[in-house]
Image (cartoon, rainbow, N blue to C red; front, side, top):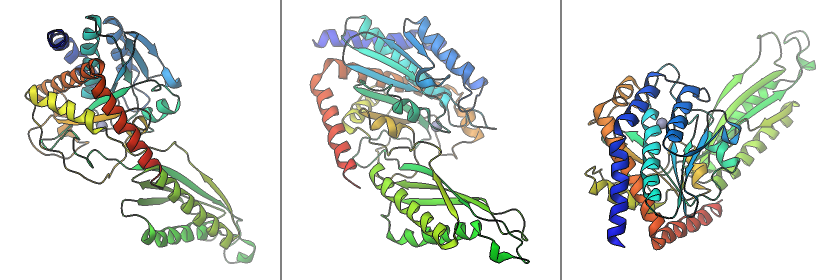
Length: 406
Ligand SMILES: [Zn+2]
């Protein structure tokens, strides 16, 4: 057993090492052709073509997203997924290093495929997940059911020298997030000649903001409510017949976020009633779920990273701050997105410094090491039913707890 597994491990490592030049060339191509969310036509095609050339069955345009794909090898269970991103930032380029996320997932897939080709029962899929910086391709893909039947999903995101793998209970969190659009339709009138004939939509927006400000005292400490006025009227001498605002409603769990969305809607209804205007309340984009990090899987990834010589600082428990489309994956299947360093210092993210680090020798070296750790973890999940069992148990119990967290 151990000798056989050692051979599969060696197959994984050499599949990644032997293809390193081609993998880095792919990443450099993506870096040199930065494409923003949902426009990643060259990048996604390059990734899908690469995987097809290496023997994966490639399904392009999954979930009706032209730049999404699913590339699969192997037939049997369990089914392990690696997630690749490749969208760039408007005006900056690859200032979030998604050209490295692309090859982290692809290299891990290539590695685990080598183990499956060498006789390990299982299936591996590399998912190309667009638009992480915008609508969140993973949200749409999760809604479309493309992750159904996946037993575990892994990915890696580059970071600074402070990057960690979320091995500690309470680390690796992200907030659930829903954007809401609130529009009020009133009646225009001359603001001096006949204001009594007007119904003021801007007043409703002002009352909405005041109501939400009052709500803030009565929400859990991890909730965030932040918004802007997107339309406040057309001229001071016209009673605004139309006014609108957009808010992000964030909370530690999807369930509590839903509670808060209802409260915000009640406030908007109250504001409309007070001013005699009509409310239009909508959710223009699907919600991001909070992130349920799978710690048994993260600990195994970290163990492989240590063994491969990429030792990271210890993760610390922390409240979620931002939101990620990984959250929606983590509600469907056990998930880990580890971070790892591509810089030997701390710097501002989404910056020119990151653009440079994302095309650096250190960036490529550490990305390939992380890919090996992900693939080796995938192999462990395929050959060790007790590890897969503990990963699934952790997933189910934490999902149940958060769904009840209200
Ligand atoms: Zn990113």
